[in-house]
Each structure stands twice: as C-alpha cells, then as structure tokens.
Image 1 (cartoon, one colour):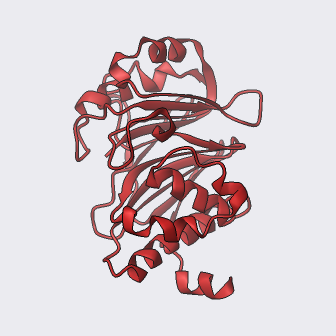
Image 2: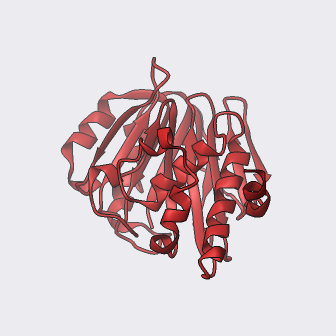
Image 3: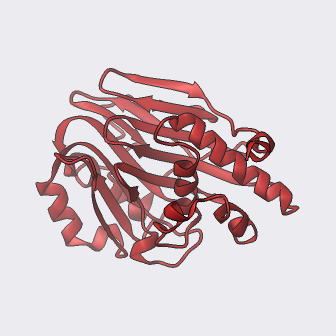
Length: 265
C-alpha cells in the first residue's frame, strides 16, 4: 500500500512535510511502519496550489529516496495546500502516468488502497464514465479510474455524495461479476479551496488515516511523519473528512446504493 500526506494552512515549504521530518514521506518510502509493505518505491508525486486555480503537478517513477529533484523542489516551493504521495504498486505498470496524484482541472486526488478483482470489473466501471472524462485517462490504475468515477458522479457540487456513489458502483460491479466486493479506500483530494479525505473498506481493515492541527495549518496523512511533538488523531473507519481553514469535520461514510443509481440512469 502507498503512503501520502496532505497539508492545508499558511504557506510553508513543501519540505516541512515531505522531506524534513524524522519520519517524512521520504523515510516512509523505504521504511513505512503502518503499511502492508514497508517499501513504497514505485514512484512519487506532488500536487500543489498557488496563484492559479489548477494545481502544479510533478511525478516520476524513481523511488522518492533517490530523486534529488524532489528534494530540491520541496526546498524551493511554498504552498498553503498540497498533496504528496509515494507509491507501492498493487496494479498497473511503474510509469509516470500511474503515479499519484492525479489531476483534472482544479481537482487533485491521491489514493492508498485497492479494488480487488479490478481486472474483472474494469470494463463495467469504465462504461459509467462519459467520453469527455474518459479521454482524460492516461494510466491504467484502479485509483485513476476511481477518480474519474468521482468526477462523473458530481464531485464539483457534491464531494461526499460523489465518492459514495462512485464507491457504490465499485461494490455493485463486483457483485454483478459474481465476486465478493473487496475494496480499500483511503484517499485525499482537493479543489484548491477545501481538502477532503475518506477512509473506508468493505472489511474491517481500512488503511490508516490521521489528522493533526499544527501552528501553521492542518495535516491529514496515511501515517504520522513526526512521532514526537505532535498529537495525531486517528480517523475512524467509514469516515469522510472535510478540512477548511476554519477547522476539520468528520462525517460517517458508506457507499451509496448502486441499484438506485443504475435505476435513475
């Protein structure tokens, strides 16, 4: 499973989250402590917001610990809202197009989890996406496809509802294919104004998620990057997180009933 971190608050250098802490994402790329795999060396990525509505994006296939460009950019770029990800591939080739975050317009998205049996339900899920959205697909991962499903389901106007409807489609597609739904979803995404996250699994083993309020802003991470000097709050499974400059709220989350979605089409 992958590791990621997101920040929202006053502008800080990306290195304050990504590379400098004792258990930073760089450290987690080769010695994660709360992941199924301790090594996350199948690429990395950054998405950050600045003066334009659309985020900047930098992704590469090198392990994060061995890319000097990543460390240099993190030392120079300041942002008040950014997402950072190190990848441990569960499906899809090691390629730049398969590295997170994924971006569409002002939206950015990154994921830690897996749609089990994806190769058997991919076509069903792809068929739910309009041509103009599907044309944006560059890679082959379940994560990117799920992001496009979220956009298809109304992410612009109803973020939590869009994620619930997209998740419902995944569950329904698995059931239609005659396989037991097995879906892990711990993701963060943003439109440049609000930071959202979700923690969910069809079993009891949802990938970990934590939040923390700091002196300059708020963080939401898959694994704490600083074991000392900060109080991390574990987000319960089946939760949807909304983070703004004013505060953080956590709401119950479950996939929508996909049969109702399909009946309305």
